[in-house]
Amino acid sequence: MKKKRWLFSLIFISIVMLLSGCDSSLLVLNPKGPVAKTQSNTIIFSILMMALVLIVVYILYIYMLTKYRASKTSDDYEPPHMEGSKWLELIWTLIPIIIVAILSVVTVRTTNAVEKVPEGYESQKPLVIYAASSDWKWHFSYPEEGIETVNYVNIPTNRPVEFRLYSYGPITSFWIPQLGGQKYAMSDMITKLHFVADHEGSFMGKNSNFSGKGFAEMEFEALAQSPADFTKWVDDVKQTAPKLSEQEFKTLLDTPHIGRKSYSSTHLGFAPPPEGDMAGHHHGGSGSDSDKTSGEKPMDQMQDDMGNMDMSDHSSMEHGH
Image (cartoon, rainbow, N blue to C red; front, side):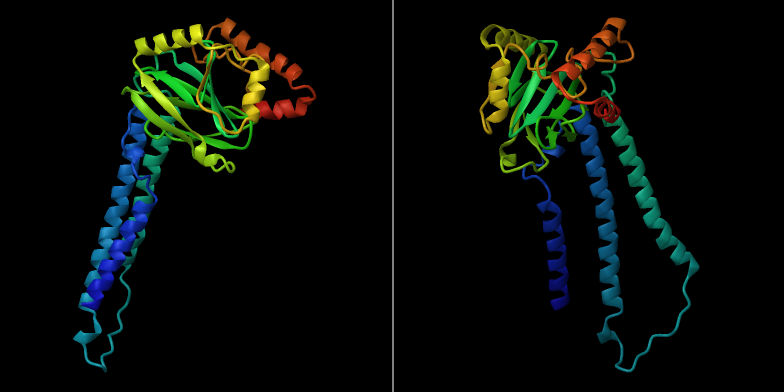
């Protein structure tokens, strides 16, 4: 009875430890886009693989405890000497190798898939959004639309979105669990995330990398709208929101906590991102010459804006991107 109680306690503790690392609402397992769906399937597959291993281990454990318990033998019993089995040794060596190989292949395929525009959306022009973090808030710039928001971002459904991430402070991690995985935002380079929302709705976004005392409040709303509603929202911001001046932007950076804000212009002109791509063009395989030219010119402007940056620093920054 004591052994059964101890075994039950062990299983219960294992389950509690497994679930304690999960978000209470399990948002990553409730995907609202193809990227998040791919990642969710990988997570579920990995959990099932681990559960299978645990089940086999627990069954063997109970079997050994029952068959070879001390009460079944006399006090002077000595087990006979047995040579090892090469086949058994080969089997329990190959099984972990096979499990690790399967998980590795699945993980690599998933990683490659989520780094690209989701399958089926390659022919569509992505909506480019620059997402910059500062202590402790998020700035979202729409270069093609000419608007900017703080602490909330609206996107159209069924259209690829390319987030270009960077930081005006410490390293942060941009994450919208129901739309895709997380990626670092850093001060000296641009990182990119490709999302598609195939459901309308409001989704939670956050910084998942500890970056200081205001880290817990670095949450934002990602609102997926129909294309028509998104266009209407953009027009409304253009008509009703104030322009974002350089002084106003500096005030935003210096203010630790602020609410939601909207502007009918962006900060990209006077405070360009690390790569210097202020035009917001998507440089894909079908980019035009004019797009490439517009992507090169801000590099010179960035050198002027950033003052004393030497060429070695500038070269290392380009190499990092």
